[in-house]
Image 1: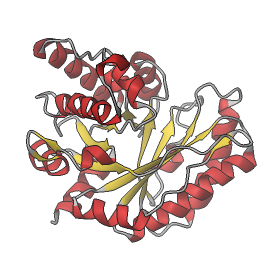
Image 2: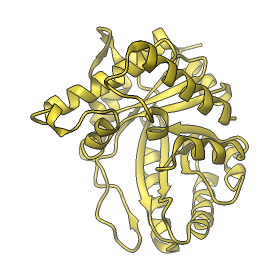
Image 3: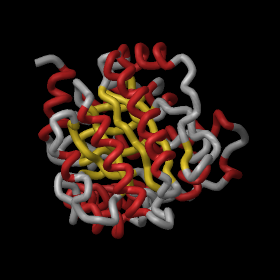
Image 4: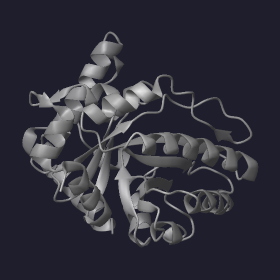
Length: 294
């Protein structure tokens, strides 16, 4: 079996969840703030990204962060190009931790239009994918946001996601398609049912497997038909702003849905904690999310 085949097998059949460690320019100050570092801790963007890399390195190199409970980790481009304990980050994740590396490839969101935010264009996508493949990345992630139950806008979001997903599949990588429904959407349940229909139409016509990353639904097991679809490798859930306890509760009642949490994973972690305190909290977070993922 090649390394890619081993990773594919683990992603399809393994127990655990995906850690989302991919905060980018826009979300980094908030992530660092939650970690106990306010904006006085850095002078420029470079220092800010250096601090967030140190935070990620502290999480990934921690003894509680292993492939026993974590299937994969989504990285920001800077992180992919960086190192953990002096080893290229992607190689460290897979060879040392048995955690599958993914890369966030979107360049952020366009302005809201008709209740949705499409992705901004991704210049040089072909080169990004080729570079990711060289660095032993298994798959990619890209996010759009749905804010209203507008069927036409939801179809546009899904259309854009799957158009790019086809290009990613062509390059030999596995795309994580993430059309997030905002948890504050007034008609969230209705938006999710439009989304389900749009995704089903697209996956029926796919010749290859993708991963779907979706908001924890209002209706339990709404996405079960997708989890059972032959062209869907896995359905994972984002925490979307729900606190960890609430996210875990919602996750645990949805069959064949596993977590891909960011904020809910790092909730409570702090730069000032001792290694023992940090390890204890990270371990209990990982365990609670692992138990809720199935």
